[in-house]
Length: 230
Ligand code: NAD
Image 1 (cartoon, protein in one colour):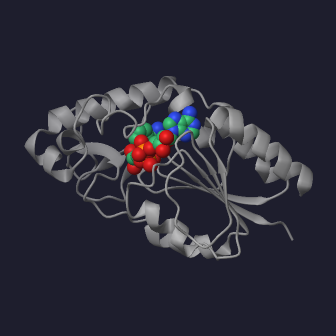
Image 2: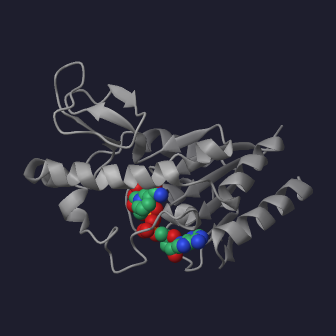
């Protein structure tokens, strides 16, 4: 039976595709305070600003390409059963060829109804306009989870974690909950590889293998080793 690898990814894996993280630079995201652009309160206060912010993020995502780290992770499917649980709202894992992906914080390439969160629309261009409505007549918003909103897929992710035989964490500061708490559901005998130029604090009884390096350099090497040893 194939071993099961769960890969947790954060903004750092997409940094070398040109998509900025936010915790590296003074807690701002592309120069904005999170409270001004990524909360339900911001959407109530100034929907135009929030919409513009995500339109710009979407434009960057659509122009970006998967990097060597995304591409290498997709190769793991050759010998392992893999599941990617990502905090990222970009679609670079999909475009790299990975199949099983849980997007905890949504997917920016979809717009969604602000009345019924199940109504999603795949976007053809980068812009959601104010005055653009869903079929129920409510304003379309980005399909992302804002700070302070529920994370509907966290329960599914929590149930997956204990099934892992190996875990790889790439490019997350582990500062955003509930995603950061997922590692606590890993069985204690399961090794956890951590790839990040700035290794986050992982306080668990597991064997933690720290690879203090950028994702595009370290992940292909790690993947080759895992495929060879499998
Ligand atoms: P974070 O910004 O809090 O932390 C980024 C981490 O990546 C840091 O630990 C940093 O050291 C590391 N890093 C930077 N460059 C790296 C590289 N080249 N290789 C490997 N690691 C690198 O990110 P987070 O923990 O994912 O939390 C950010 C939140 O913001 C998430 O909720 C996410 O939804 C959102 N976000 C998403 C994107 C995206 O979709 N690409 C981009 C920015 C923010």
